[in-house]
Length: 252
Ligand SMILES: O=C[C@H](O)COP(=O)(O)O
Image (tube, helix red, strand yellow):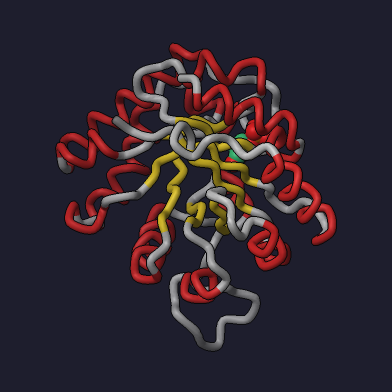
């Protein structure tokens, strides 16, 4: 039995004051942690203050990226060890926006995965195809390449906890959600890849869906057998909407 996880990716949004207000509002109506695990990933600048707000709560917080070295002359970068020092439990890796705007390759994502594990962070590794790749019938080829790059470098002994997020690029921030059937098909494909890597990993790994998840479509997505929660962008910036999505996961 996999515990549902709903993760809010706040992306590059919000002042510290706005982040505090959002965290307070989510904490005020905190979902039952026995039913759903809730994670928020503020921008680096707000991690510390959100962590303070969330003290005493079961809501987890994490980051949206890291650099793979522990420390050194890497201007502008932040290491996994620094994130742990801030109390982060999770880190999102390989988001399509990082692949698209910052040139992150599968190789870079693997290095970041290994750095997250070294630092004791739980990686949330994102995969997903573009609209043209889907139209060309390449969804499994693209998503398969992305997950295989990771699995070939990973060790089943240390995989435990790792979260995978399927985010079709064409559904991110567009209002176009994959249908539950489309999402389930890719999630089942990913779970088969995990089974070939390690049967226990296939059973335990939470595979989240991301891409225009909203309160009104969350329940039918989360009802799919291989969808274990969501990675939520825009809708995670509104506490009421985000909490409804968490409630949908709790009830799945
Ligand atoms: O990380 C979250 C995803 O990019 C989804 O974003 P969205 O919910 O705004 O489509």
